[in-house]
Image 1: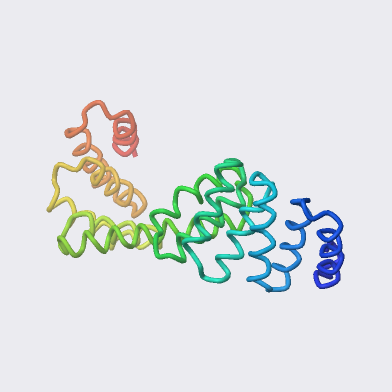
Image 2: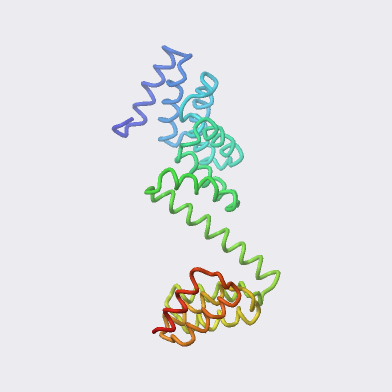
Length: 235
């Protein structure tokens, strides 16, 4: 198996289960060899047998879930992966695969939780971070699509446009969108702070101070806006 010869490994694992038919690990390793070769139905049978021999066999439920996922049996995959997580809540790989399964099932909001947990357990795993980013992006898009359907001229849509402009350093366009958002929601203090930030980046320090002052009028005890306003005024 370590040399990548899964077909040869399968032959030896079959001998193992013939000699020790009650050995759960024998069926687990056989299932892994079959999974490596894409023999999905056979892998499922072997892994299920491993779990019959030992319901707590480490990793068996996870690999069973992966096999079911590759067969597009998403409900079975979800159940198997959840069983693995119940046995080992600190398994980032199982959590990642549960998130992937939910994404494939069209449930990005259900994918976020396990992928966040996986990223917490394995913060340098690029695959986990990639799928986590996809899940959050899809949830964000869905949320804003619902907002647009309910109120296409919502201040939140203008703020989203402003944030997109700001991220691409188009500060004048961002300022325009923040001002449109403020016109619709003049009591939203954080809009003034974000507007002030964009004025500052655009070099319009007088307008920066005004924006922060407006924020302070709405939130007089704001520990962030006060020093920002003072700094803008001194500049």
